[in-house]
Length: 96
Image (cartoon, rainbow, N blue to C red; front, side):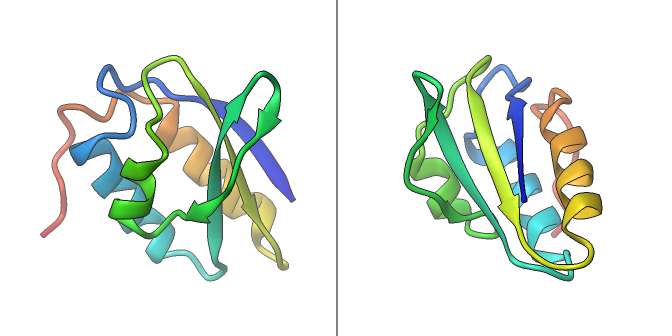
């Protein structure tokens, strides 16, 4: 199952937003992958729970990503993570 979302954070998937997404993805009951969408096609996907993987995607504000997950709770997981990425995460606190 896949879900596309536009990145709302002004800095894209850089330090703070990438950390928040990786923490949220790691807390899910199913593995989540994420890929940058370019010209309508999703590129190579990385583990969404990896901060380094997220930052290597080079996703900027306003660009689209594709989240993917499999399993019984995939739809709920993708909805939750899409909602997270639809917010400006630049000033939200990071859990230690």
